[in-house]
Image 1 (spheres, rainbow, N blue to C red):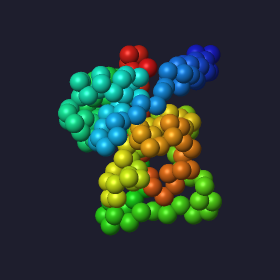
Image 2 (cartoon, rainbow, N blue to C red):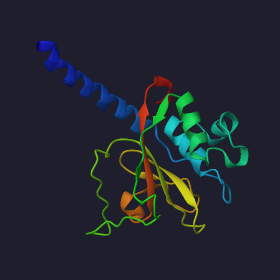
Image 3 (cartoon, rainbow, N blue to C red):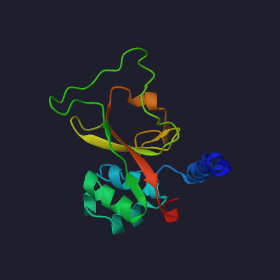
Image 4 (tube, one colour):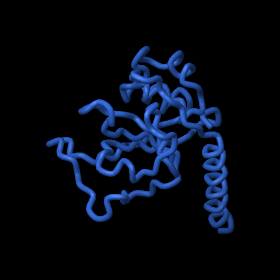
Length: 174
C-alpha cells in the first residue's frame, strides 16, 4: 500500500523537473522573412535545435515542416510526440467556434497550462493561410520575424485553429 502512495508523488516530481528543464532551455527561433519555415522554427523550438538543423533533417526543403505530417515525423524521430489535436473550428462547416466572455482571455476546458504544444493559428500576414506557433507552457513563441518573441495566448484569441499538445518520450528532445 505504501508504494501506491509514493508513486504519484514521484511521478509529480519527475514531471515538474522535466518541465523545468524544458522551460529553461527554450528560446524563440525566428523564420527568415518571407519564408514558409514557421513549422521548422516551431520544430526547432520543440526539440531545442537550430532552424538549420531542422531544415537539414526534416522533409519539405523550402517548406520544411510546413505540413503537419512532416513536422510530426521529424518530432517523433527526436522523441517528441504530437498529441491528439483540439480543433476550435467545426471541420464539417469550417465555422469558427466562438469564445464568449472576456476577449482578452482564452479559456480551454483541458489541462493545458504547463504543457508545451504546437498551435496552428490564422496567419497575420497572409490571409487564409495557417501559421505555426509554439506554446512553451507559459507563453506563445511566434517564429514570425514581425512578431515579438514572447506573446500571451490572449493575443491569439479567435485566431487559433488547432492545438497539438506535445509529449516528450526521449531525453534528447529536452
